[in-house]
Length: 54
Image (cartoon, rainbow, N blue to C red; front, side):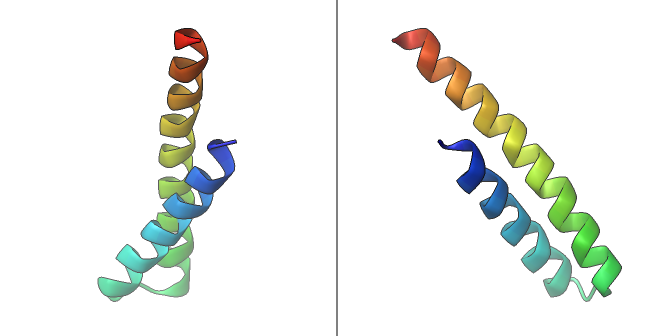
């Protein structure tokens, strides 16, 4: 269940990063999407690693 919070956290970080850099709404959406995908991949690896240990 770590995957969904990871996606939300990634989107939030991406949105705030683009906003801090003075990006437009499209920039903020693009940063949010790319960060959400990256954090989803990291979360997926964390879940796989966790299941491999058990």
